[in-house]
Figure 1: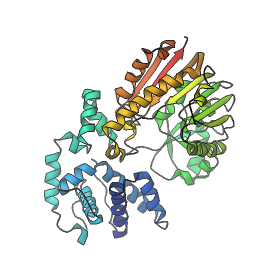
Figure 2 (figure 1 turned 90 degrees about the vertical axis):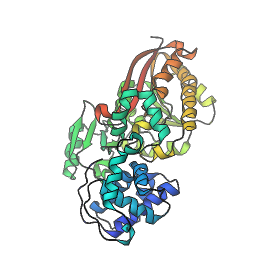
Figure 3 (figure 1 turned 60 degrees about the vertical axis):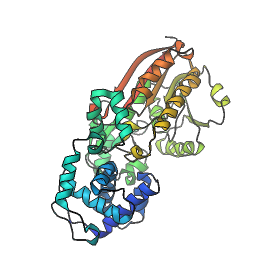
Figure 4 (figure 1 turned 180 degrees about the vertical axis):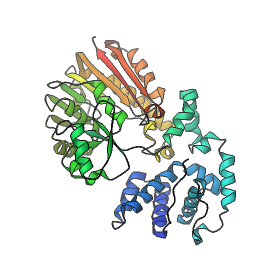
Length: 408
């Protein structure tokens, strides 16, 4: 928890937050989409109001279980979510709140006492389902406490410089002229925003000078280390954040094949590629296994950024912990191993591949690599390097990546 700095609360702001929370928890909608829609419905709101609505909604989603426990029931109505908002402010240091009818019946002293009493229970204190808390403790042991606490901290906004169009120093100057202060992170292309602002309205973004991509995520393409002129396959490309990074490292030279089972995601990638000036990307929807087999023994580099639980990015998607189920994670593990088995033959002798997830669970990460290497398909590969990043390690997203060489 963090003590909030309070300004005067406005009923309209609170109504938008309460409505957003009701939609997230009772209609099963994704928090980022709900907040995006909410802000579009209120176009005249100033930047402070928009930030308040977004940040308050996200923080309450993070601590939803704790606040519902303090309320004493599962919120069922928008009025209940007004009370959840009040509990949020009191727990985070508010001394008094407006005497609104929606806040009637709340005892601030009792709220603080309940919060203090519940602080001894990790699953309630950090607000996470019991089964997920137990899974994290089983897989990460003593590291789980710090990991879980870190996952409840708001994520920083990180930009990746597009090398095809600019340098990090030039991008930093361009953003500064538009009123955006940044700080370089690491030796690569990352810039971290000093404060949260809407970078998508900048001329620098419209000109394709950067993408928004977490620092840990940016390490994946560097580990794969593609070179200009190579044939590279991104087999789970999605919207293409890492694909675009690979294209930049390749100086847009050679062939970069982007695959995905969802064709609409590749449509989005093509739009992003045009803005970025990446001309070496070829998109191919995976309609059947033949699409994969046609690529066997052809790639110098292969990226398998596989579907995962996303537990390493709970900072960005806090509502996902309320949507995840144990059987879904089991199915994901089966899918991950199937992708390793069926896609790894794409790598030609002497080539390399990276297996990556934004999960922090060993069962989705190093255990999958161990199973693969012990299999018939995996005997052709050697583990060269692996990186396990927990959110408390560098202050960014949790990630896993393993670099494997074929015939080395």
